[in-house]
Length: 454
Image (tube, rainbow, N blue to C red; front, top):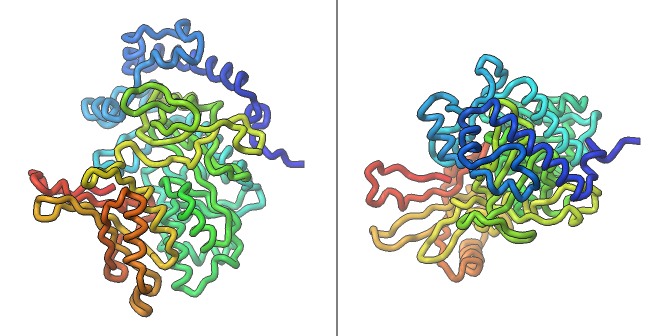
Protein backbone atom coordinates (compact mmCIF):
# COMPACT_ATOMS: atom_id res chain seq x y z
CA UNK A 1 0.00 0.00 0.00
CA UNK A 2 1.36 3.40 -0.94
CA UNK A 3 2.03 5.78 1.92
CA UNK A 4 0.10 9.08 1.76
CA UNK A 5 3.25 11.00 2.68
CA UNK A 6 6.62 11.46 1.09
CA UNK A 7 8.36 11.36 4.47
CA UNK A 8 5.84 10.10 7.04
CA UNK A 9 8.27 9.91 9.97
CA UNK A 10 8.92 13.64 9.73
CA UNK A 11 5.70 15.00 8.25
CA UNK A 12 3.59 13.62 11.09
CA UNK A 13 5.76 15.00 13.90
CA UNK A 14 3.88 16.88 16.60
CA UNK A 15 4.77 20.47 17.46
CA UNK A 16 7.29 19.64 20.22
CA UNK A 17 9.02 17.21 17.87
CA UNK A 18 9.21 19.78 15.08
CA UNK A 19 10.44 22.46 17.48
CA UNK A 20 13.26 20.19 18.68
CA UNK A 21 14.25 19.32 15.11
CA UNK A 22 14.23 22.97 14.05
CA UNK A 23 16.29 24.01 17.09
CA UNK A 24 19.00 21.47 16.30
CA UNK A 25 19.07 22.48 12.64
CA UNK A 26 19.22 26.17 13.59
CA UNK A 27 22.22 25.56 15.84
CA UNK A 28 23.94 23.64 13.05
CA UNK A 29 23.15 26.41 10.53
CA UNK A 30 24.60 29.08 12.81
CA UNK A 31 27.78 27.03 13.28
CA UNK A 32 28.14 26.45 9.53
CA UNK A 33 27.51 30.10 8.73
CA UNK A 34 30.10 31.34 11.22
CA UNK A 35 32.65 28.92 9.80
CA UNK A 36 31.98 29.14 6.06
CA UNK A 37 30.12 32.35 5.13
CA UNK A 38 32.15 35.45 6.11
CA UNK A 39 29.55 38.07 5.17
CA UNK A 40 26.68 36.40 7.01
CA UNK A 41 29.03 35.25 9.78
CA UNK A 42 30.13 38.82 10.50
CA UNK A 43 26.48 39.78 10.90
CA UNK A 44 25.99 36.99 13.43
CA UNK A 45 29.16 37.85 15.36
CA UNK A 46 28.13 41.51 15.54
CA UNK A 47 24.88 40.39 17.18
CA UNK A 48 26.69 38.08 19.62
CA UNK A 49 25.25 34.93 18.04
CA UNK A 50 26.97 31.57 18.53
CA UNK A 51 25.55 28.02 18.35
CA UNK A 52 25.68 27.86 22.16
CA UNK A 53 23.66 31.08 22.43
CA UNK A 54 20.71 29.43 20.61
CA UNK A 55 19.02 27.55 23.45
CA UNK A 56 15.43 27.80 22.22
CA UNK A 57 13.58 28.90 19.11
CA UNK A 58 12.87 32.19 20.89
CA UNK A 59 16.57 32.97 20.48
CA UNK A 60 16.00 33.13 16.73
CA UNK A 61 14.78 36.70 17.25
CA UNK A 62 18.28 37.75 18.33
CA UNK A 63 19.55 37.04 14.82
CA UNK A 64 19.36 40.15 12.62
CA UNK A 65 16.95 40.25 9.69
CA UNK A 66 18.34 39.93 6.18
CA UNK A 67 16.71 42.10 3.54
CA UNK A 68 16.79 42.01 -0.23
CA UNK A 69 18.31 45.50 -0.28
CA UNK A 70 21.25 44.35 1.86
CA UNK A 71 21.78 41.31 -0.31
CA UNK A 72 21.57 43.43 -3.46
CA UNK A 73 24.05 45.96 -2.09
CA UNK A 74 26.54 43.14 -1.55
CA UNK A 75 25.94 41.87 -5.08
CA UNK A 76 26.40 45.34 -6.58
CA UNK A 77 29.59 45.91 -4.60
CA UNK A 78 31.04 42.55 -5.61
CA UNK A 79 29.27 41.29 -8.75
CA UNK A 80 27.91 38.99 -9.89
CA UNK A 81 27.05 37.13 -6.66
CA UNK A 82 28.13 39.42 -3.84
CA UNK A 83 29.80 38.17 -0.67
CA UNK A 84 27.13 35.63 0.29
CA UNK A 85 28.73 32.44 -1.03
CA UNK A 86 29.84 29.88 1.54
CA UNK A 87 31.59 27.62 -0.99
CA UNK A 88 34.00 28.25 -3.88
CA UNK A 89 32.34 29.39 -7.08
CA UNK A 90 33.91 26.53 -9.04
CA UNK A 91 32.00 24.02 -6.86
CA UNK A 92 28.66 25.26 -8.21
CA UNK A 93 26.53 23.35 -10.71
CA UNK A 94 23.48 25.64 -11.06
CA UNK A 95 23.03 29.35 -11.75
CA UNK A 96 19.67 31.04 -11.27
CA UNK A 97 18.20 34.50 -10.82
CA UNK A 98 15.08 35.93 -9.28
CA UNK A 99 12.31 36.88 -11.66
CA UNK A 100 12.97 40.60 -11.19
CA UNK A 101 9.30 41.57 -10.90
CA UNK A 102 10.08 44.33 -8.43
CA UNK A 103 11.52 46.35 -11.30
CA UNK A 104 15.18 46.21 -10.27
CA UNK A 105 18.14 44.03 -11.16
CA UNK A 106 17.54 40.36 -10.28
CA UNK A 107 19.51 38.62 -7.58
CA UNK A 108 21.86 35.94 -8.88
CA UNK A 109 22.49 32.73 -6.92
CA UNK A 110 24.56 29.56 -7.21
CA UNK A 111 23.79 26.04 -6.00
CA UNK A 112 25.96 22.96 -5.68
CA UNK A 113 25.10 19.26 -6.16
CA UNK A 114 23.87 18.78 -2.58
CA UNK A 115 21.76 21.94 -2.85
CA UNK A 116 20.18 20.67 -6.03
CA UNK A 117 19.45 17.27 -4.50
CA UNK A 118 17.70 19.10 -1.65
CA UNK A 119 15.76 21.36 -4.02
CA UNK A 120 14.49 18.29 -5.87
CA UNK A 121 13.44 16.69 -2.59
CA UNK A 122 11.44 19.77 -1.57
CA UNK A 123 9.44 19.55 -4.78
CA UNK A 124 8.84 15.87 -4.11
CA UNK A 125 6.98 16.93 -0.96
CA UNK A 126 4.69 19.08 -3.10
CA UNK A 127 4.09 16.69 -6.00
CA UNK A 128 3.52 13.62 -3.85
CA UNK A 129 1.46 15.61 -1.36
CA UNK A 130 -1.00 16.58 -4.08
CA UNK A 131 -1.32 13.05 -5.37
CA UNK A 132 1.20 12.90 -8.22
CA UNK A 133 2.38 9.31 -8.68
CA UNK A 134 4.87 7.43 -10.92
CA UNK A 135 2.14 6.53 -13.43
CA UNK A 136 1.49 10.22 -14.17
CA UNK A 137 2.65 12.16 -17.21
CA UNK A 138 3.73 15.64 -16.10
CA UNK A 139 3.97 18.56 -18.53
CA UNK A 140 5.88 21.72 -17.62
CA UNK A 141 4.54 24.83 -19.34
CA UNK A 142 7.69 26.70 -18.43
CA UNK A 143 10.38 28.58 -20.36
CA UNK A 144 13.40 26.92 -18.66
CA UNK A 145 15.34 30.18 -18.46
CA UNK A 146 17.53 31.52 -15.63
CA UNK A 147 14.51 32.02 -13.32
CA UNK A 148 14.43 29.04 -10.95
CA UNK A 149 10.67 28.56 -11.37
CA UNK A 150 9.77 24.92 -12.06
CA UNK A 151 13.33 23.65 -12.56
CA UNK A 152 13.30 21.74 -9.28
CA UNK A 153 9.82 20.39 -9.94
CA UNK A 154 11.03 18.96 -13.25
CA UNK A 155 13.73 16.91 -11.53
CA UNK A 156 11.33 15.92 -8.75
CA UNK A 157 8.91 14.59 -11.35
CA UNK A 158 11.69 12.48 -12.81
CA UNK A 159 12.72 11.29 -9.33
CA UNK A 160 9.16 10.12 -8.68
CA UNK A 161 9.32 8.11 -11.90
CA UNK A 162 6.82 10.16 -13.88
CA UNK A 163 7.00 10.64 -17.64
CA UNK A 164 8.29 14.24 -17.62
CA UNK A 165 7.70 16.58 -20.55
CA UNK A 166 9.58 19.89 -20.87
CA UNK A 167 7.48 22.54 -22.61
CA UNK A 168 10.22 25.12 -23.11
CA UNK A 169 10.61 27.00 -26.41
CA UNK A 170 7.08 26.11 -27.52
CA UNK A 171 4.16 28.28 -28.53
CA UNK A 172 1.01 28.13 -26.43
CA UNK A 173 -0.75 26.27 -29.23
CA UNK A 174 2.03 23.68 -29.40
CA UNK A 175 1.93 23.18 -25.65
CA UNK A 176 -1.84 22.66 -25.62
CA UNK A 177 -1.65 20.17 -28.46
CA UNK A 178 1.18 18.23 -26.81
CA UNK A 179 -0.73 18.07 -23.53
CA UNK A 180 -3.64 16.49 -25.39
CA UNK A 181 -1.57 14.27 -27.70
CA UNK A 182 0.53 12.79 -24.85
CA UNK A 183 -2.48 12.33 -22.56
CA UNK A 184 -0.79 14.42 -19.91
CA UNK A 185 -2.34 13.98 -16.46
CA UNK A 186 -0.51 16.76 -14.55
CA UNK A 187 0.30 20.28 -15.79
CA UNK A 188 2.66 22.67 -14.01
CA UNK A 189 2.39 26.40 -14.76
CA UNK A 190 1.66 29.80 -13.30
CA UNK A 191 -2.06 30.46 -12.62
CA UNK A 192 -2.08 33.13 -15.32
CA UNK A 193 -0.63 30.80 -17.92
CA UNK A 194 -3.05 28.03 -16.99
CA UNK A 195 -5.83 30.45 -17.95
CA UNK A 196 -3.95 31.44 -21.10
CA UNK A 197 -3.65 27.82 -22.22
CA UNK A 198 -7.36 27.30 -21.57
CA UNK A 199 -8.11 30.32 -23.78
CA UNK A 200 -5.92 28.89 -26.53
CA UNK A 201 -7.56 25.48 -26.23
CA UNK A 202 -10.99 27.04 -26.63
CA UNK A 203 -9.82 28.90 -29.75
CA UNK A 204 -8.53 25.60 -31.15
CA UNK A 205 -11.81 23.84 -30.41
CA UNK A 206 -10.20 21.61 -27.76
CA UNK A 207 -12.31 20.73 -24.73
CA UNK A 208 -9.76 20.55 -21.90
CA UNK A 209 -12.42 19.78 -19.32
CA UNK A 210 -13.08 16.39 -20.92
CA UNK A 211 -9.39 15.67 -21.42
CA UNK A 212 -6.87 13.59 -19.44
CA UNK A 213 -5.47 16.32 -17.15
CA UNK A 214 -6.45 15.60 -13.55
CA UNK A 215 -4.19 17.97 -11.62
CA UNK A 216 -2.59 21.37 -12.09
CA UNK A 217 0.37 22.43 -9.93
CA UNK A 218 0.37 26.23 -9.75
CA UNK A 219 3.22 28.47 -8.64
CA UNK A 220 4.75 31.89 -9.14
CA UNK A 221 1.77 34.10 -8.24
CA UNK A 222 -0.64 34.59 -5.31
CA UNK A 223 -3.45 33.89 -7.78
CA UNK A 224 -3.04 30.17 -7.13
CA UNK A 225 -4.80 30.67 -3.80
CA UNK A 226 -7.35 33.26 -4.90
CA UNK A 227 -10.61 31.29 -4.74
CA UNK A 228 -12.23 32.86 -7.81
CA UNK A 229 -9.12 32.42 -9.98
CA UNK A 230 -8.56 28.88 -8.78
CA UNK A 231 -12.20 27.95 -9.38
CA UNK A 232 -12.04 29.37 -12.90
CA UNK A 233 -8.89 27.34 -13.68
CA UNK A 234 -10.47 24.16 -12.31
CA UNK A 235 -13.65 24.73 -14.31
CA UNK A 236 -11.82 25.35 -17.58
CA UNK A 237 -9.49 22.37 -17.18
CA UNK A 238 -11.91 20.00 -15.48
CA UNK A 239 -9.13 19.24 -13.00
CA UNK A 240 -8.05 20.00 -9.45
CA UNK A 241 -5.55 22.80 -8.92
CA UNK A 242 -3.03 23.10 -6.07
CA UNK A 243 -1.04 26.13 -5.00
CA UNK A 244 2.67 26.08 -4.22
CA UNK A 245 5.13 28.87 -3.42
CA UNK A 246 8.86 29.33 -3.14
CA UNK A 247 11.66 31.83 -3.56
CA UNK A 248 14.98 31.81 -5.38
CA UNK A 249 16.57 33.55 -2.39
CA UNK A 250 15.76 30.79 0.10
CA UNK A 251 16.50 27.94 -2.28
CA UNK A 252 13.27 26.57 -3.67
CA UNK A 253 9.66 25.74 -2.85
CA UNK A 254 8.64 26.42 0.75
CA UNK A 255 4.98 25.45 0.90
CA UNK A 256 2.51 23.19 -0.91
CA UNK A 257 -1.18 22.42 -0.94
CA UNK A 258 -1.98 18.79 -0.15
CA UNK A 259 -4.76 16.62 -1.57
CA UNK A 260 -7.08 17.58 1.27
CA UNK A 261 -6.91 21.21 0.10
CA UNK A 262 -7.60 22.94 3.43
CA UNK A 263 -7.66 26.37 1.83
CA UNK A 264 -3.95 26.96 2.20
CA UNK A 265 -0.46 25.55 1.80
CA UNK A 266 1.54 23.47 4.29
CA UNK A 267 4.94 24.91 5.25
CA UNK A 268 7.76 22.38 4.83
CA UNK A 269 8.76 22.87 8.44
CA UNK A 270 11.50 20.28 8.69
CA UNK A 271 13.50 22.30 6.15
CA UNK A 272 12.38 25.86 6.85
CA UNK A 273 11.88 27.88 10.00
CA UNK A 274 9.22 30.47 9.26
CA UNK A 275 8.10 33.46 11.29
CA UNK A 276 5.22 35.87 10.75
CA UNK A 277 5.92 39.41 11.91
CA UNK A 278 4.32 42.81 11.91
CA UNK A 279 5.94 44.43 8.85
CA UNK A 280 6.27 47.76 10.64
CA UNK A 281 7.43 46.80 14.15
CA UNK A 282 9.14 43.49 13.33
CA UNK A 283 7.38 41.86 16.29
CA UNK A 284 5.81 38.39 15.90
CA UNK A 285 2.08 38.06 15.30
CA UNK A 286 -0.08 35.13 16.36
CA UNK A 287 -2.04 32.45 14.56
CA UNK A 288 -4.70 33.90 12.28
CA UNK A 289 -3.12 37.37 12.11
CA UNK A 290 -1.81 38.68 8.81
CA UNK A 291 1.85 39.61 8.69
CA UNK A 292 5.10 39.38 6.77
CA UNK A 293 6.78 36.00 6.49
CA UNK A 294 10.44 35.69 7.45
CA UNK A 295 12.34 32.59 6.31
CA UNK A 296 15.33 30.71 7.65
CA UNK A 297 16.39 28.01 5.19
CA UNK A 298 18.11 24.84 6.42
CA UNK A 299 18.82 23.15 3.09
CA UNK A 300 21.03 25.38 0.97
CA UNK A 301 24.75 25.06 1.61
CA UNK A 302 26.04 27.46 -1.02
CA UNK A 303 24.22 30.47 0.43
CA UNK A 304 23.15 30.31 4.10
CA UNK A 305 19.94 32.29 4.62
CA UNK A 306 18.86 33.30 8.11
CA UNK A 307 15.75 35.42 8.82
CA UNK A 308 15.20 36.66 5.27
CA UNK A 309 12.39 39.21 5.06
CA UNK A 310 10.33 38.10 2.09
CA UNK A 311 7.81 40.99 2.04
CA UNK A 312 5.13 38.33 1.45
CA UNK A 313 1.90 38.69 3.41
CA UNK A 314 0.59 35.50 5.03
CA UNK A 315 -1.79 34.28 7.71
CA UNK A 316 -0.54 31.22 9.59
CA UNK A 317 -2.95 28.67 11.06
CA UNK A 318 -2.28 25.40 12.95
CA UNK A 319 -1.60 22.12 11.18
CA UNK A 320 -4.80 20.66 12.65
CA UNK A 321 -6.77 22.90 10.30
CA UNK A 322 -6.12 20.16 7.70
CA UNK A 323 -7.27 16.55 8.12
CA UNK A 324 -4.29 15.04 6.24
CA UNK A 325 -2.35 14.22 9.41
CA UNK A 326 0.70 16.37 8.68
CA UNK A 327 2.19 18.31 11.55
CA UNK A 328 3.20 21.17 9.26
CA UNK A 329 1.39 24.46 9.85
CA UNK A 330 -0.54 26.10 7.03
CA UNK A 331 -0.58 29.51 5.41
CA UNK A 332 -4.28 30.11 5.02
CA UNK A 333 -4.88 31.41 1.51
CA UNK A 334 -1.22 30.89 0.58
CA UNK A 335 0.69 34.07 -0.20
CA UNK A 336 -1.94 36.76 0.24
CA UNK A 337 0.04 39.51 -1.43
CA UNK A 338 3.13 41.58 -0.73
CA UNK A 339 3.81 44.33 1.76
CA UNK A 340 4.84 46.64 -1.08
CA UNK A 341 1.88 45.66 -3.32
CA UNK A 342 -0.47 47.98 -1.51
CA UNK A 343 -1.38 51.17 -3.33
CA UNK A 344 -3.11 54.16 -1.79
CA UNK A 345 -5.67 55.82 -4.04
CA UNK A 346 -7.40 58.89 -2.60
CA UNK A 347 -6.81 57.60 0.93
CA UNK A 348 -8.03 54.05 0.25
CA UNK A 349 -5.77 50.98 0.44
CA UNK A 350 -5.88 48.92 -2.76
CA UNK A 351 -4.35 45.45 -3.21
CA UNK A 352 -3.96 43.71 -6.61
CA UNK A 353 -5.10 40.39 -5.10
CA UNK A 354 -8.40 41.90 -3.94
CA UNK A 355 -9.05 43.30 -7.41
CA UNK A 356 -8.32 39.95 -9.07
CA UNK A 357 -10.61 38.14 -6.64
CA UNK A 358 -13.49 40.30 -7.90
CA UNK A 359 -12.61 40.38 -11.60
CA UNK A 360 -12.24 36.58 -11.81
CA UNK A 361 -15.82 36.11 -10.62
CA UNK A 362 -16.84 37.15 -14.11
CA UNK A 363 -16.18 34.23 -16.51
CA UNK A 364 -16.89 36.57 -19.44
CA UNK A 365 -13.64 38.44 -18.74
CA UNK A 366 -10.72 37.00 -20.66
CA UNK A 367 -7.90 39.29 -19.44
CA UNK A 368 -7.53 42.49 -17.43
CA UNK A 369 -5.10 45.20 -16.39
CA UNK A 370 -5.18 47.75 -13.58
CA UNK A 371 -3.85 51.24 -14.23
CA UNK A 372 -3.19 54.03 -11.75
CA UNK A 373 -2.77 57.53 -13.13
CA UNK A 374 -3.05 61.16 -12.09
CA UNK A 375 -5.77 63.19 -13.74
CA UNK A 376 -4.28 66.52 -14.90
CA UNK A 377 -1.60 66.25 -12.24
CA UNK A 378 -4.17 66.74 -9.47
CA UNK A 379 -6.29 63.70 -8.66
CA UNK A 380 -5.27 60.04 -8.48
CA UNK A 381 -7.48 57.68 -10.48
CA UNK A 382 -7.71 53.91 -10.85
CA UNK A 383 -9.17 52.01 -13.77
CA UNK A 384 -9.56 48.39 -14.76
CA UNK A 385 -9.27 47.58 -18.46
CA UNK A 386 -10.83 44.30 -19.57
CA UNK A 387 -11.05 42.05 -22.58
CA UNK A 388 -13.99 39.67 -22.87
CA UNK A 389 -14.34 36.22 -24.36
CA UNK A 390 -15.29 36.47 -28.08
CA UNK A 391 -15.35 40.23 -27.67
CA UNK A 392 -14.76 40.91 -31.38
CA UNK A 393 -17.79 38.87 -32.44
CA UNK A 394 -20.28 38.98 -29.58
CA UNK A 395 -19.32 42.24 -27.88
CA UNK A 396 -19.35 42.93 -24.14
CA UNK A 397 -22.27 41.67 -22.02
CA UNK A 398 -24.75 44.35 -21.08
CA UNK A 399 -24.25 45.97 -17.67
CA UNK A 400 -20.90 44.20 -17.11
CA UNK A 401 -18.93 47.44 -16.83
CA UNK A 402 -21.43 49.02 -14.46
CA UNK A 403 -21.79 45.92 -12.27
CA UNK A 404 -18.05 45.29 -12.10
CA UNK A 405 -17.41 48.93 -11.20
CA UNK A 406 -20.00 48.71 -8.44
CA UNK A 407 -18.51 45.52 -6.95
CA UNK A 408 -15.01 47.00 -6.97
CA UNK A 409 -16.24 50.16 -5.25
CA UNK A 410 -18.19 48.21 -2.61
CA UNK A 411 -15.05 46.24 -1.75
CA UNK A 412 -12.92 49.39 -1.47
CA UNK A 413 -14.82 51.76 0.81
CA UNK A 414 -16.71 53.35 -2.07
CA UNK A 415 -13.59 54.20 -4.10
CA UNK A 416 -14.70 54.79 -7.70
CA UNK A 417 -13.04 52.54 -10.28
CA UNK A 418 -13.11 53.33 -13.93
CA UNK A 419 -13.89 50.20 -15.97
CA UNK A 420 -13.41 50.20 -19.71
CA UNK A 421 -13.05 47.74 -22.55
CA UNK A 422 -9.63 47.34 -24.18
CA UNK A 423 -9.16 46.46 -27.83
CA UNK A 424 -9.21 42.71 -28.52
CA UNK A 425 -5.81 41.07 -27.82
CA UNK A 426 -4.29 44.40 -26.75
CA UNK A 427 -3.63 43.52 -23.12
CA UNK A 428 -0.44 41.59 -22.35
CA UNK A 429 -0.49 37.83 -21.80
CA UNK A 430 1.97 36.20 -19.43
CA UNK A 431 3.79 32.88 -19.18
CA UNK A 432 5.62 33.57 -15.92
CA UNK A 433 4.58 36.01 -13.22
CA UNK A 434 1.81 38.30 -14.38
CA UNK A 435 2.31 42.05 -14.05
CA UNK A 436 -1.18 43.44 -14.32
CA UNK A 437 -0.82 46.64 -12.32
CA UNK A 438 0.70 49.69 -14.02
CA UNK A 439 1.31 52.74 -11.86
CA UNK A 440 1.57 55.71 -14.21
CA UNK A 441 1.48 58.12 -11.27
CA UNK A 442 5.28 57.76 -11.04
CA UNK A 443 5.57 59.66 -14.31
CA UNK A 444 4.39 62.91 -12.76
CA UNK A 445 7.39 64.82 -11.49
CA UNK A 446 9.72 61.96 -12.39
CA UNK A 447 13.04 62.61 -14.07
CA UNK A 448 12.96 59.27 -15.84
CA UNK A 449 9.36 59.04 -16.95
CA UNK A 450 9.44 55.28 -16.35
CA UNK A 451 6.31 53.38 -15.49
CA UNK A 452 6.21 51.07 -12.51
CA UNK A 453 4.77 47.68 -13.42
CA UNK A 454 3.80 45.08 -10.80
